Length: 174
Image 1 (cartoon, rainbow, N blue to C red):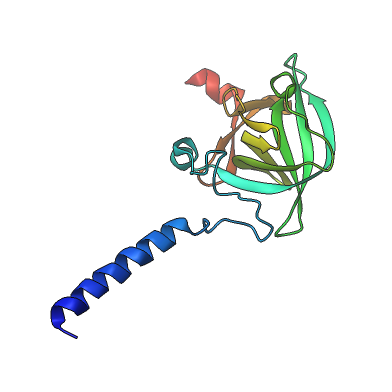
Image 2 (spheres, helix red, strand yellow; image 1 turned 90 degrees about the vertical axis):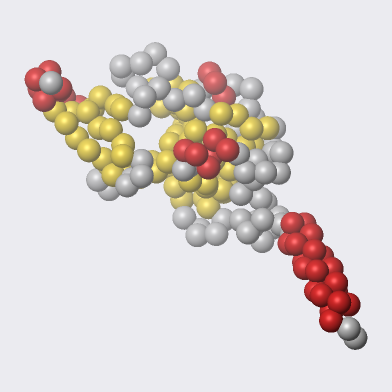
């Protein structure tokens, strides 16, 4: 075999390897074929990559509508049992009115993209995008700031997943 034919064969195998790897499923593909790393179009969303949203996948074990005292809206809160870690996580899916066209029920398998909010011992996953068998929806969120009892405001530092508290008095002085 000549040097030229070896080089040609090397390039041919290299191109075949690239094509093969391009056709393989993404690394995030779950064992049961439920793909958590892509959106409905089969490619990762630029929005998800830019915002650094975390992905969570599982089965809904409980649903509850919760209203905030200072707002006239109710949010849908679900208990989601994850498939890989076998944990139950509380997920805020957002305003009930925004989700009225989605068929969200106990037993549904869903994927949510969002951020984990930690407040002491309480952990809440705030969803910004939801995938369910009926389709995908981007969840509109007001600012990531909430008024809490005692005049404290909690704001999430999403990169560090921690809560920073400031009193209202400090806000007035600025």
